[in-house]
Image (cartoon, rainbow, N blue to C red):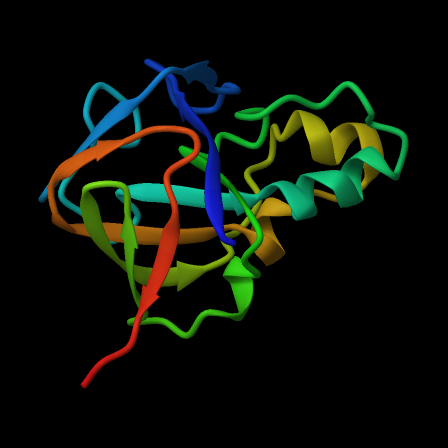
Length: 146
């Protein structure tokens, strides 16, 4: 079963995020209080724990949820294989995938340490279509268009 394992937030851009108990994700905003929140196509970032495990296997076993600046850490779903436009029900929200991967910024601490960062290839971004709360343990349902 696909599920949320962590919600992560930061007040500043370019820094790892801190794990919180739950987050409110709002239409035209993203995660309320997060530095990356705003009315744009990358309101929310998601990364699979399976992707983080790939970096742990490269010797970065101290990695924590939020270290890749992801808002939602997931488990049990291959996020980067979802087509752009895919809708997902996560917790009380509905969100739509808007981008797969991103360019790694120059000062990425993970990339400097390992020569590679997983977020540019396996992280995804989404916009919020229906507002609501998300917390660890919430299921992730890929919605099939009818």
